[in-house]
Image (cartoon, rainbow, N blue to C red; front, side, top):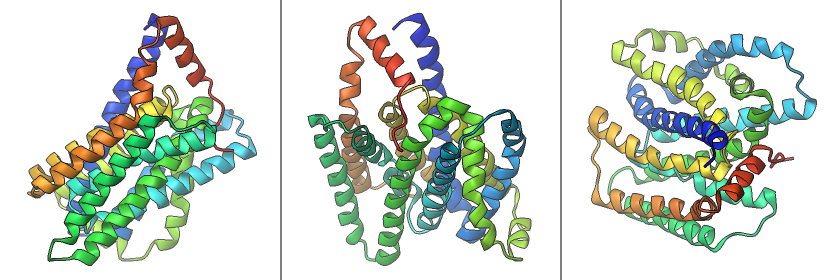
Length: 322
C-alpha cells in the first residue's frame, strides 16, 4: 500500500472500528433504558437531543450549496436511518436479548453487498452467493431455535423480524449516504440526515415524555448519553467518514464486531446468557458475512499499482442510488 493510500485508508479503518464498538453497546443501553421508559419516548428523546447537538454543524452548511437532488437524498437517508433503522430497532430490542439483537442487526453487510451489486449492475461473485446462503441459513437456524423456547415466542419473533427489517434499512442508508459524505463531508451529511429523519418523531411527542426522562438515575443518564451522543452523533459521523473513503461492502465488514460487543455487553451489564445455540448461529452468520466480503480481500492482494488504482476509483465512485 502506498503512503498516499495508507494515510487515507488507515484513519477510515480506525473510525469504523470505534463506530461499531459504540453501536455494539447500543442494544445493551436500549434494553437497560426500556426498563423505565417506553420505546417511543426513548426514540423521541434520543433523536431530539441528537438533532440539537447537530444544529451548529448544520448552520455551517450555509456555506455549502446542496442541490435539490442531494437534499431529497438526505431526506430519504434520514427516514431510512432514524425511522427505518433506529426506531424500528428500539421497538424490536425490547423483546430480544442484546446479543441476539446485535447478531441480527449485524446482518447489514449481507444486504449492503446485495444492494451494492444491484445498483452497480454487476454480477454476483460466487463468494457472495455462498456467503448469502450461509448468512440466511444462520438466521433461519437462530429463528428455529427461538421457536423451541416455551416463553414469549410471539414477541421474540416480532422483535427479531423488526430487527432484520432494521438491518435492511441500515444497509439502504449506508449505500445511499456515501455520495453525500464524499461530497459534503461526514459531519454535514450526518447532521442533515439525522435532523430530517427526526422531524416525523416530533408528532409523537406527548406530555409524559419529560417526566419519564426526569426520573432517570445516574446509570440511566450514562446509557442515554451513550445512545444520544455516542451512538447517534459520534458513531454515525465516524461511520459516514469511513464509508466515504472505503467501498460500502468493505466498510460493512466491521459490523461483524457488533454481535461480539453486544453479547459481552448484555452478559456484563444485563446478566443475559450466551447459549450454545446462539453462539453456533452467530458463527454461521458471521462466516457468511466474511465469505461475502471475500472478493474484496482477493482484490486487496493485487499488485500495489493496481490496488492503489482500485482505491482511487472507489474514492471517486459515482452515486449508487439515483
